[in-house]
Image (tube, rainbow, N blue to C red; front, side):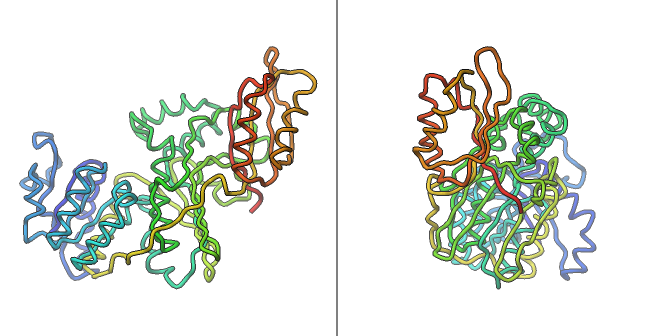
Length: 419
């Protein structure tokens, strides 16, 4: 089987190395040799590993129009021109393997339909969780289940930042700078720290789990930029850990909830022990109960492992995915959760009664109220609510921010109870 590799960055280089290192073992497993025929790059003059000599091209047609190439492996990243290349490859009767979460989450419906029409495979195990097998289990091993909840830590960069903030007492900005220096975070970290990367992965997982197309724009997304070391400290004092959680659930009536949000999770939650750049995904099905998938969510060789596994599935004629109907995702304001609220207010009598009065008007009751620190004339106050409708929380906070005694609402974080 001859493949065309589009992209020779971190993941592409890993694919080349893995096929070279494990090619013999792979051939014994599938009865066929996998050979990289051409590799598309932007800069042909860049110094490359010796294994790719004679295979480099800057012309997409050398891959897309070559009748000898059976599979196109797209590891370029970004939405364009990757989307256009994938469409052309499928239209030309080539199967496509990709690690591109942005393209799959936004355009999966169109590409899957096209792949089904052309009777080729579109596989994307590496688009979620790097080397963690999760796409294939959802499509095959768990196909007999009704999956009703999926929840996880889907971004290693944000998990690394939150872990370091907790363990070393550092600020968000300080850890982010360190992460960028170590290569864990991009120079422009927006996709990671603002939750967009996790939302794209969640859209893919929800689509597979609930048999309905979910797109990232339908997912309420809040990242970790507002998390301070004070929030980390207060969470610890309250018996919680802050994680950026991606959550999807469907009920028996087909009501679908999906969001990405910082969450205070209890110490008994299995996600509490997932630290550093690691990812973990909890899946709940009506037959298997709860399963946890854990491992490195990114990196050269783990991601390359998932890519090459998909190439093997093409050889084994493992089908892609059926078409689903579009999902109607519940608006975040209609969901229910406990919330942690941190605000600063004038340190004088009567302020708390005003705050609780506004909350009471919106039907929100409190589990706890703690005054943390007094800085000058202002005190920092931490509230934990009982389960409340999120829209009511939003409405109450708008009213509270308008009170003359309130300096600011500093943060709002979901709170999850005991597991």
